[in-house]
Length: 527
Image (cartoon, rainbow, N blue to C red):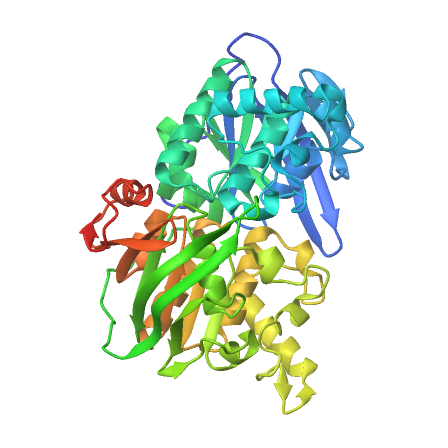
């Protein structure tokens, strides 16, 4: 057992003396070549927040999909409010008051927020004014800031998360499964969400909370279950443990001591953005300013972090740099060469690596095997090709290396990307991009959805490459990540870079405040 292992705490009886909300006994689920869950036991008390933690690929999401009726266990039993149940579909789970907010959103981009929420639940309040009133009642009660008439394709990741939560509450769930619900939230939004969860708990609702952010788990959970390699290894109460002890329970060994900060910044510019302006059309068809006068330079060996509440232009900035959007004005230079009008393929071949914000939409072909996904974005480069010829044998061999070096949990490289957990998908993408030794890495949320062990590994890979001269543009909702990795920090607000911050001195709370525009909004202000 790892040093500092937590004492296992026996679950208490429900506060009202009644039956547990959910009991899972002996749950086992097998897939070809892998056992996702093995003999898992969990008791979730009614009116509590119960956290479920574990490494990527430990089986957390599979277990919750079983509870939500998306998959059937090969062995074991499920009990809800004292009744033994067999769920054949999510509709069965919803009928028993269980709702799930998935890590990867299940929304129709071409529908409005209201249409997404009522889709499949039209019989509850219709599709018109009554439905809208109920949506706004829930939104106001829990601070979810719903905009019912906006198309989902027009809103950012954080707003999409809130729509998913609204969908569950709208259907009357009294047991909520939240899979990484805070991944895209800034500190004050996390605090607001946790306050809402405590209100739900006080009203007798139950929350199953999956997260890799162990500090958050300790602050909000009443009980924590740790899963390692598909089986339960401990149940603990927050007051008896620390984030490091939880992390060591997850990985089954001691974690390395973090390295001290060292400067590797040179005076050699690798990525320069000057006077970048971009306009776009909003949901009402009005042309508006998306990016305005964006100026920055990233030098060899430097990580520039950009903080901001989702939807303030970060995604559009990344897409402009990658050639996915054409700016109205401005200049983008890579190592002294103007690439402002170059196609995305040329930018990639010239030395820009790319970790996308949404790995499913821009980073992977979910139905393709891992070795084909290894080639994405680098089809003209070795080991994927030689001249005009693809070299599948070399690509397969290098995929095996990435799987080993980045600890991608998979039965083999011929399985589809969709079969991997979200964190393992992310590790595959990071491994692919780092393998081509880019001059500049554009990294949007590089550790979103990965566990603490994988996060530390990805951070180490970025730090090592930075020492070798890599320049990194880092976009992240994880403020600890931004502060810990960045050599310099900028805050983006309403499409402008408004504030500079010193990573050596700024706190997450100060950075979060700056992201809301509360610091005066002038470039150069200290956060």
